[in-house]
Image 1 (cartoon, rainbow, N blue to C red):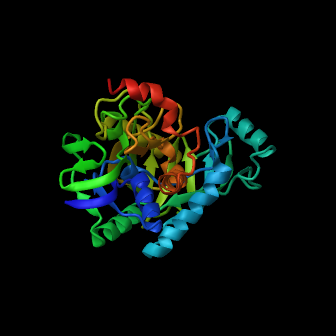
Image 2: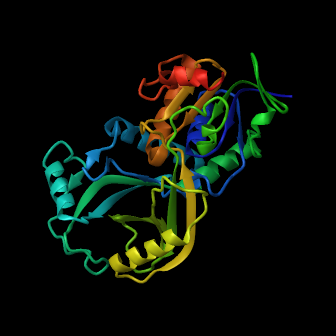
Length: 355
């Protein structure tokens, strides 16, 4: 029998940072993860954008979360010997006059730290078709998700802290202690993305799962110095490759790439991008988003040995470090969790799911 303090289910971006902060706190843990290439963390581009939406508003809590996230990635990258995060400028080509107006108005107000209109709007004419100009969002960041997840996974393997397997709820027994196959733990924490939406402890939480698809293209003539956006987003991956996406589908039947997205994305890209490109891959995943667009963090109000760190949606790269650290401090020092994300706010529906 293996004895540990924490059993973590999932090694996406949330499970990675939860285990990272437990490691830094000197606490024992075991991670179970099947290494699914279609998980949302492994399909995402890794973009951190401080503003969002058609109204060009600041992302929730960004002034606190952004510097914390950047510091966390830089610290983890140094320990793992990789470049975990890179600062970029996002070039947002305006799809409408209304969007340009909203951008201009926001740039003159409280958002001016992040957005601006350039002095010369012709500098991208060789690469893109655009008629209404563009704005700049800075700083944005690109997280090296493939390198980060793989490097931490290799560290977990080296320290015998990883079990590569599919988690089976059937084998989980929750008493005064967590028992799972040959593992005994004080607590189990679910960081397993969409799968938390169906397990018996958290299935009543207001998840709002949605499907996203993206293409991976090769374009040797397109500058990798920027992130580009106009309906689609182009994010540089290195070696002349770019991530192109993503869709947001609320009505879906599977997590597979679709011909409809591929055809639509190629058509849109061919109209917008002047440089030649080749499609190398087509990926898809289902995001663990939430109705409130706020994460789920904390221990179950009726089963304190069962916890969750999930529901990051499209903001996983910015939110996960901050709330993983907050959750570890709660678990090890009994410090409070931000009420906006604490799952105790759903005590009623979580109780009813178990009846």
